[in-house]
Image (cartoon, rainbow over all chains, first blue to last red; front, top):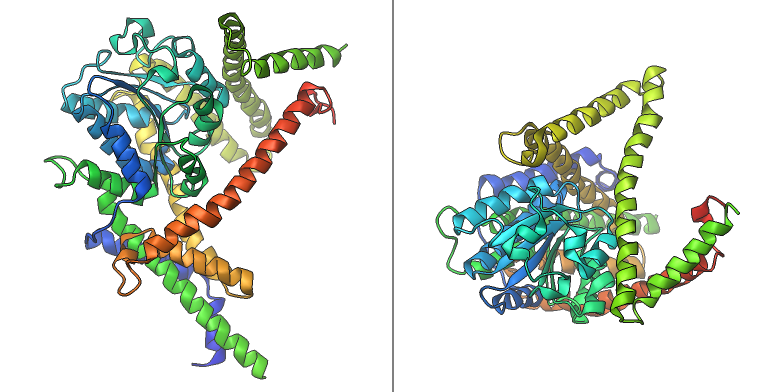
Length: 285
Length: 212
């Protein structure tokens, strides 16, 4: 191969890379295939922690994600709700992200209806609260003062599911679906240590490595990172495959990641081969 | 006087909030809760301030037809329209069939998701150009990146010969060098935050009052 071809390859127009990436994403969508995968220790730990929650208990869900992170986190969010609802665990949910309520409310309504759960008795959604770390601190201190009303305008005191749950520490677990700031890091820093809370986190792939130190230190009792984490959680929740009408979104999408990652790795390897060959040729000259 | 009162307030309230961690008395707690509520009210008020600021900055540019005034007009129109539709929907605005929900599902969601999805293409291009084994450090980074990238997806586990070991290598990279570096960063940042907090409480750092 001519040297200038290799040099041109190294400096190729990035639109060729975009085209290649587009094809790499499209192929597994058009021709789905499922490769088996193992469950990470952190995801297993999260599943086990939810599994240990006794039926009838109540958890606090902080759904802090937006449409941008939806593909990574919605599969976990759905699988986790299935897991909680089929165990008869009640939940009180809220969000610190302004674009989250229209995203999560329909999912809450759809899945609770599927399991025959009643709003106000088995679950409720308190909506969005601004204030970031301050709101987290307030959730740790006093939830009725922080959210006097739920998203439907009901007084929080009128909802059976919130009775007896004044602070974050009163809940069996805090489940944080976190796409960034404010999210898991802020929950850990602001209230986990002070109240010795049991917190599980599902986060984006890019934030996952940031939160591993919290998991290793015991500040998180489980961690699911990105789409692979969501797919692993789906596998644990539905080991025999999904029930009728349920789609395992992450399990289906993880193949797109497979081919996308393979494409980037091939590019990097070819780029380095071209780089070494041209460098050696230049040194000889 | 203009700076003394805010400085005294910062000192007293800052010290009071720090004290909460050391004085677990219910009455003390009651006071800190009041401060927290004030903080939340101020945060909500900042939303309104942001709204006014957005209009204040952009409206004159539209009126005077300054550069890119068309985009600013679209932004202001979208702002007013979304606000009106949101108020009209009331507490039912998130239900299917509501205009606000339609706007969210068919305008905001695709736009927001598209912006984020573009990252896949830019990352592929950046990775191709940046990950070159030019020296020892770059080679270590390159090898670590490839191991993590391959092992993070099921494809890696199915590779012949190395498939079994790859997840173990990845976990070691994530659990040992990654955690060591991140803990160092966290501790450094935490010490920095403590020192900045002390500087603000003691009035040494005054940038929040509008001075250098």
